[in-house]
Length: 205
Image 1 (cartoon, rainbow, N blue to C red):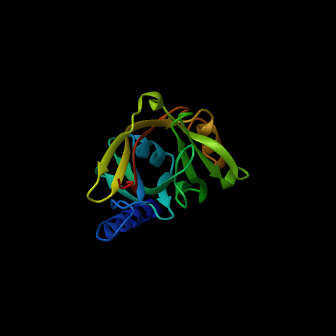
Image 2 (image 1 turned 90 degrees about the vertical axis):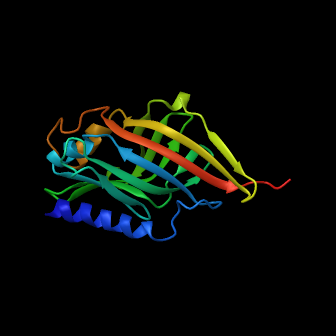
């Protein structure tokens, strides 16, 4: 019941936000990551009693019948802002929650760095260390698609189809922090994919 309540709550928030202005709007300074988990990841986590969700300005919705179905997926809509190394999810956390013992691991303010092909985040449960949590397997081939809308004075920079896997060692760390049986989360498991859109002002000539 706890698992259903958590997922249902995330879904309701997502549905409500669709009817309101959100960071997905094409306005300067308002940008968004769309992250979709790999098919089967949620059922793998659910079999270990773990729920994956987001908090802090981000929303989530379920694709498929349920998180326990083999093709079940979760889509995250996460506000981002540009920084020197890439983009950062300021104020948004990805959370792994163990329903059996109420242990959780927060991945706070993830930073996507295309230069290194890594996604890092601060993990409060691991002494607030900044850790590599995901690897971008196709970082070297991702190209920015730039669209200029001179009428709206808006530039859109998009990166589509970044493939994500769990970074080396993060599976072991998650298993330990969540107090799961050894081997519950395979190292290097496919996490999903992400698209990033950054909106900025277009300089007038």
